[in-house]
Image (cartoon, rainbow, N blue to C red; front, side, top):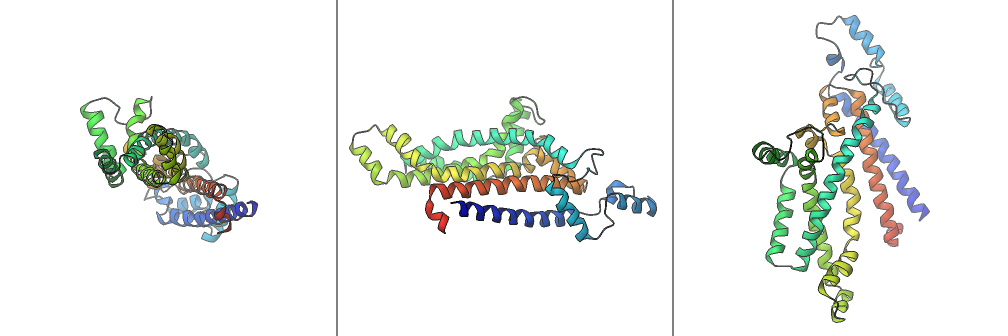
Length: 306
């Protein structure tokens, strides 16, 4: 098992190195930050002075070496747009808002998808099963930005039940959490339903029914417990994807999280903040994948030797 874990950690480190190369390259494809930092009619001496100050006069490979060395220490430099603020400090300040929103979205996904998925499998072919399939279809077909706009128009503008944007109390989190978590509701529902169908056709479930156990106990205690392994392993990836994929929802609802920070940094061509955000969310995503791989190795020893 130790060898399996070490191999997975090594693969994760190689992945992060590759991600750092991609992040460093793509950040510089957005344009020259000097065009944002200085007015178009600035003299050439000002461009040269700022270029030296920010290290933009060095060759690209030297800039990457400096970037990689500083990234290992969590130092991504100071922001171009937010003068005097460190790039990593901005990410750390915005990260709690994103985690708060992602946590509520995950809670919403689990509370809605588990009952629907279980009952759809228990009543296969019924109207409720068709209802569950319809929810899964719509959930995976609707873009989160479109759903967010529709939710704002209905529940914030027309009904005035919730605020349209911003971060406040619990009421300000409801609409963005639904918009962010609806796709996961669809994915979890389909996954739980397929796992439950397989479990309900197994021999030990048939034996439990022959023994005369109540149907609710067969389904919710014996069935769901054994069908939970695939959804649990997918759960880690959902957490990572919600943290890394929050840009659209946070932009629609003006939620002051990491996603909105990333968009603002890209528009301002703020290399330092873009790199800090991208590397932070990459570490989160790779770490969750590593955790899922290790859990798989513990749950199924055959995977350790594959």
